[in-house]
Amino acid sequence: MRRPVRVPGYVYSCIALFLGIIVGGLAPGFLSPVVSGTALLLRIMLRLVPILILATLGPAVANLLRRGLAGRFAGAVILWIMVTSTCAGLYGAAISLLIFRIPLTGTRGAWSEVHEIISAFSQSAAPSLPLIAIGVSIIVGVCGLKSDRLYAILSSVECLIASLGKRIGRVMTILIFFLGITTGVKFGAEHGIGHYLEMTLYTAILCLGWFIIYLVVAVKLFAKWPLGKVLTCYVVPTATFAAVTCSSLITLPVNLAKAKEVGVRNEVADFVIPCGSVINHNASALMYVATAPFVIHHIFGLPISGTTMVFAWPAIVLFSIAAPGLPAGMGTGLWGATLFASMLGLHDPLRADFVATWIALSAGLPDMVRTAVSATSDGFTAIFFDSTFERFFAPGRAAVSPTATTERV
Image 1 (cartoon, one colour):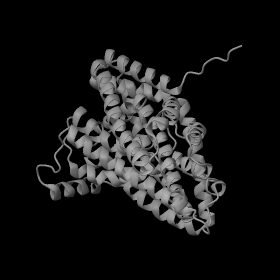
Image 2 (cartoon, helix red, strand yellow; image 1 turned 60 degrees about the vertical axis):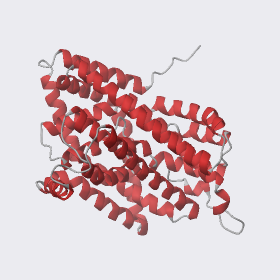
Image 3 (tube, helix red, strand yellow; image 1 turned 180 degrees about the horizontal axis):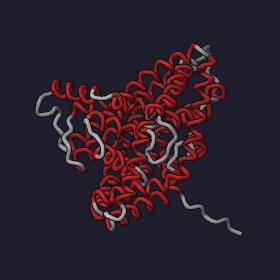
Image 4 (cartoon, one colour; image 1 turned 90 degrees about the vertical axis):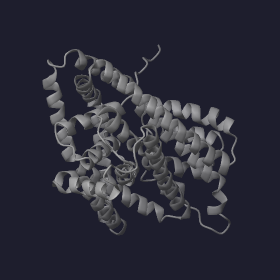
């Protein structure tokens, strides 16, 4: 007897989002209480963002420091991930500024704009709390390097957040439906679906560009591996599985198996790919920087400049490295929307509408694309380091034990 086919979660998310947009567009007056309730829920979630940052970024910083000191190989892998994520964010900012013809500075000049951003943060404590949380998280993570007891606490918090992510995933379809209603009421059914399809195409174009750059540089230029074999034997099955599951962690077994099938040695794959599945979300770093001009300028018609992008870019990249395992962009996406809303000085109800639209447009199909690119980037990283393996483990130099290194991943 054949087992019933399990419908992937992203299918429910897409159906819920489209249905919510249509229903909201057809009955905006009747569903206005739903919009108000969703806005209230988002405001509560926004208040929890600093706590979420502390609970995820602190353990991640401690893990990065501890693994980075385990050996030259581990340190080089982590440095590569941090550099490529930073470059991905810069790539997203540059391309989006070109697409939407965003000026590098506002009409008042760069210094005046910097002063306005700082003033927006200083008007109240709430907008600046995410940035304060990042600073505190870094300090706590550094302390976790020296204190085993603190590190154990941070690891427990990390496990708790992972468990929370699974529970949130069970009700995510309902939340996506409510966010779809909000988008439909705000823009109407036709414009709401139009914006979502535009966002999907926008994500696909930017992520495909980054995928090609990463593939050519890491695999062809430096590693000098044949692209045909990598694409057919590794990329196609891994990217497909990652897109269907929308999770780099769930894709991990497939990612490992396919990377080894194309020739990546066990010592490299068993460290690089598990580590990357946790901290290498370069497609998210790319898109949550690039999403800002799309939502702010294209949808809401608000002014934004390159100065604002430059201010937000490193913060979003840093948080993407410690992105919690929450689906539909409720981790980096939620915080990225909060950060830009704060930098622009938005206040409710516009602030809540802005965050709701950002998250709704990031779910479903765009999330599939981001996950596929991030997951295959882990394999490209493994291929690159496989080609430089002997530099780290030359005769007479102690090798890092893959089992010991990935125990906490």
